[in-house]
Image (cartoon, rainbow, N blue to C red):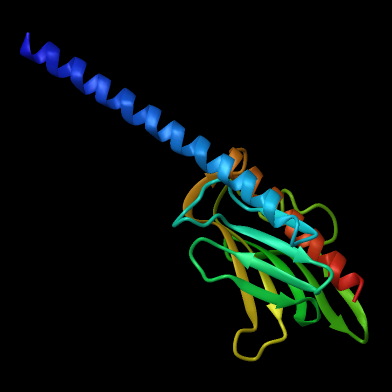
Amino acid sequence: MIVLVAIIIAILILLVLKINENDKANTDKITVTKTTSQMMANYDKVIVLNDSIDNGIFPYVAFDNKNKKVTIQLSTLPKKEINYDDIMGIELIEDGSTSLSYGNIIGGSILAGEAGAIIGGMNKKDTVNYLSSKISINDFQNPSYEIIMIRGAKIKKSDKAYTVSIQKLNEVIDTIKFILNNK
């Protein structure tokens, strides 16, 4: 009888914890949506990289065409602002290999590496342990800034985590390509 009561109490505790976890996730999504809406007044384009809030911060990349600045906020790093004129290029990095490189300026023309769709990349593996986008910056002290979406977890390319991550990075890369083409 005592064992049965203990099992029922344990199940109830797990249910309450799960309900609280779902409530927090829903609250985070509402907060991200409200914050993104508020940010749109300051920026021309905001790309939310992730729906979860970590340390009270949600990760995003925002573009301000009036002031010609990109603002990057990641939950693990301080906010970074980059002037459009300081952006030299952008890369998609998958498991240590560059799948796409764009923006090497030679003789006034922009060279694009691996033209075509980013999705699928050059890597034929079914899983990814590391996925990021690296922005090259005209700054001797800090010549690049990396937006890391997947690190250390073996994620299948068919998983939602990978497809959402590659979609968000693709959107950032396409916007940076637009900026580079219109300098």
